[in-house]
Figure 1: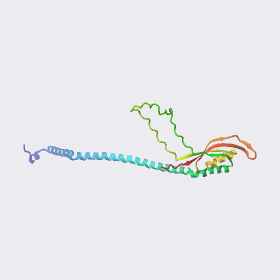
Figure 2: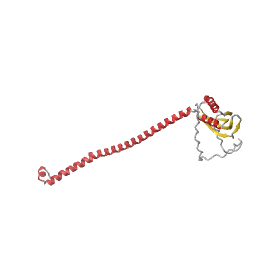
Figure 3: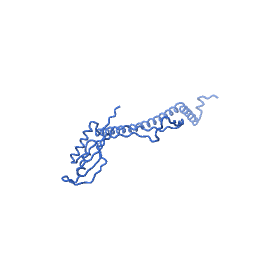
Figure 4: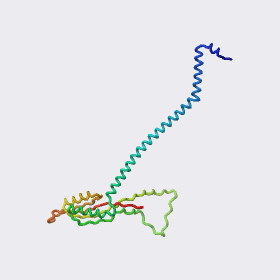
Length: 228
């Protein structure tokens, strides 16, 4: 069946509008299928990628903020460590520190009955509990099965960077002078602790008033440089 322009002209206005509508709908369908759908899919993929990148940026900003905080904390710890080292004498300065303790007692008006520095305190080696070792000719214990689990290894204990130096001290003086001696020790620029204080009964001494004998342990700390 032939269909020409004259036939189109003879159609009613409603039919012409319907044909134009169908043509537009068909063109729109082909445009959507071959062009717009691909553009829309690409746009959705770009939106998803943008969202992921924004989330990564937020996470990295949080990590960066925490990193700055950690750096500040490390710097504060380093400064605190430096200040602590300034209060720890080395081996060459221990004699001067002990002389400062004695001078503090003389200035406070107490008499030293005993001033005995002890060697630096060291941690004794750990002794493993259990039965004593058997002689060499004893029978070897049965071998453990292959699937027996070995005990977990103990974590390594970090080496101390300081040694404790205890000093046994006995002094005689009035209660006021004794307290003044301890106060002067507390004001020394180095770290000095007083432990195990034991005060005896006060006794009247002619020309000196009431004198009390006090024993204690004065502890100072020496910086140890651990060389490789």
